[in-house]
Image 1 (spheres, rainbow, N blue to C red):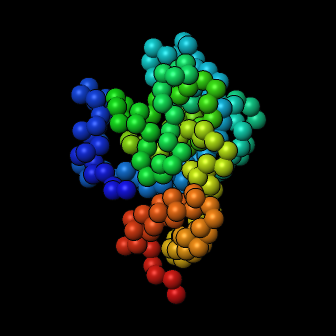
Image 2: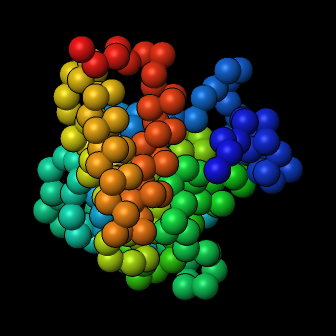
Image 3: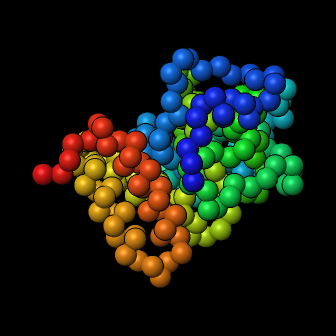
Length: 213
């Protein structure tokens, strides 16, 4: 799957583009997204704060599992997102690991809309206001649906959380070893998808990661 240049992504956005990016902006890689998030949580979309819907919205989510950070003690509120009725927004393609949900290429340049009752993997940062906000910036995979159990995206994020936790000089070796392990495991059809994504990550990082000794 080819990488989309920023100009092409901007062309996909609505004419009334509400976000802007600085010259030279680069969409964060999935590993960078994992490394920069304060909290990565798999949660079920419960509702939105109706009083806040006229602005950017406030999404209420029941945590199921955390892949990074401490497990919240109860429901969390995510600023700048809203719950909509089922059928009003398409679910993420479980086989897509490179690009963000199509909603990310309209309006605010990040995904804002989530169907009630769906399970989503959220990447969050704690804002100066003490509230949870989307992590990652424009066109990032900060919030993708997980419509099936054992979907490739959470598997990949769990591995990237392990990679992000080690010193930079060790990361390339970890990435290459996991890519090779996945390619050798032909019994799982998701392995090829995961290996291809890790190969993209290696290609993006190779200029900055030292070769293994």
